[in-house]
Length: 263
Image (tube, rainbow, N blue to C red; front, side, top):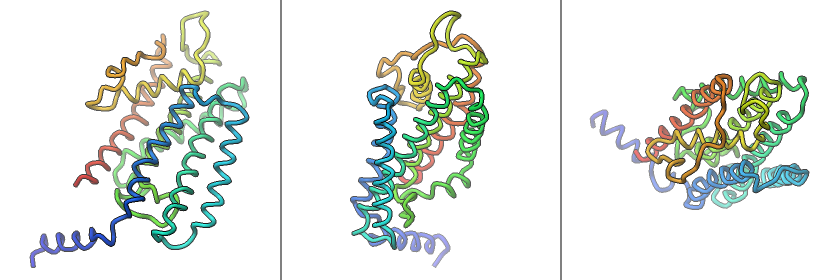
C-alpha cells in the first residue's frame, strides 16, 4: 500500500458515520452564529435598548448556563448534546452581552480613570485579531471544523466563536472611539455638532465590516449608507486598525474554515 493510499484509508476511517456529529449538533452549529450575530445586531440597532433589564437578562443567561453546564458534565453523548449546546450558546450570548454593556458603560462615563481599562481592552482586541491571522494559533484556539469537543466552549465549533469575536471586538473599538471623541483626542463630527451615540459608532464599524466582505457587496445591495462621515485622521486611524486587526483576520479565518469544511 502506498503512503497516499494509507492516508486516504486513515481519512476514511476518521470520517466514518459513527464519528460524525449528530444532525442536531450540525444544525445547532449553523444556528448559533446566526443567533449570536442577530442579538448583537439588535443591540447595535437599538431594537434591544440598554437598561437594567438588559443587565438582568445577562444574569439570567448566566444562571441558565450554570444550571445547564452542571447537568451536562461528563463525556460526550448524543443524549447530553441538547444540554451542552444550550449551555454553550448561553455562555457565548453572555460574553456578547457583557462585553457590549461593559464597553458602552466605559465609553459613556466621563471619567479618565477608565482610560487604562479601555486601553487594555483595545490592546487585547488587537492582539487577539493578529493572533487569529496566524493559522497555527487560530486552530489551537478555535479547533478544526467538524471536530466535536467535550468541553462546553468548543462544542459549537469555530463559527460560533468567530461570531462572538466580531461582537466583542466591535464593541471594544466603538467604546474606545467614543471615549477618545469625548476627550477631544479625535473628531467624529464637524465642530459644534453632537457626538454620535455608542450605537451609531458601533454601526459605523459594522458597516465597515459588511462593506469588506468579499463578493457579497452587502452595503450596496442593502442600500445601506455609511452611518456618519468622520472628518479627521484620528478616527480614520482607528478604522484602519479595526480593518487590520478585526476585519481581515476574521474574514480570513472564516474563509479558511469554510475551505477546510468543503474539502
